[in-house]
Length: 374
Ligand SMILES: *[C@@H]1O[C@H](CO)[C@@H](O)[C@H](O)[C@H]1NC(C)=O
Image (cartoon, rainbow, N blue to C red; front, side):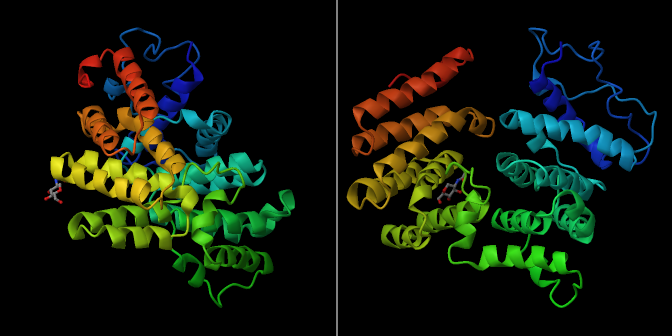
């Protein structure tokens, strides 16, 4: 039987069809024609099944690009599925690199679903849009999706009286996630008549212009869990770390970090510092980052050990994904951990815990050789 995880995986593989972006008009088969409960498609339970190599779907030229109704029929179940199993969206959707003509409708549909759900599902919708941005959705898709929503605000209010407020929150979060430009709001200045349309824009504007507004929008739905900083912050952190690599000025890096006023997201600095070092893969850059982390944790305690621990554990957890780009990522991270232990950022207990994390994963995937013995 098709399990749900793979269903989502498959449906996202079909995103090009849904978006109508790939292959030209009328080339692709209708979504769903390849997947039915009889398992007409590839057997994902086959031990030889490897999702990474299943790129060649047997798509036949039968139907034109999905119309609105078909699109809704195809996409809604995917979104509903996602809302139930938020963490099961596969990497595959990040690989899709397509421009679609239906992108804005996906945005509209997703947010509309979010309007009549609870906050934790709204959070998932916000995350989904941010994840799909630059992969499946363009900035134009997102802004015209919101355009459509704002223009139907009167209809939306029939089902969800609070729609202007909620829409404003979605807009603000997208801006904080760097997938919608702030000028989206200002462009409307003086052009909007509808009271509720205006209310939504005002709400968004208040949220993003508040002191530290951007930084707190990760928690706009109250369920962020403090684990996922908005892109706005991540981008700032990456920028200051890269600046540090060329200036070698630790004081300046520290000043920039303090200026962000987000001590609860300092784990992201640790995460990004390791990520940048791994991506670079050279000894000098690894040493530079180790030295900065030591300065920020042990020497100045700008980053608390709690935050450090959270950051380093997060990157250990993601190392498999990172090694898709950098094949010896696990080895490099291991090297970093050894160096961090030498300078007493990592104690023996944590070191053991981190090695176990890495080792277990790689051994279980038959890839034990990647982690060099310490
Ligand atoms: C690594 O960093 C060094 C020094 O900043 C730079 O010259 C080099 O191009 C980087 N290498 C990669 C692969 O990013």
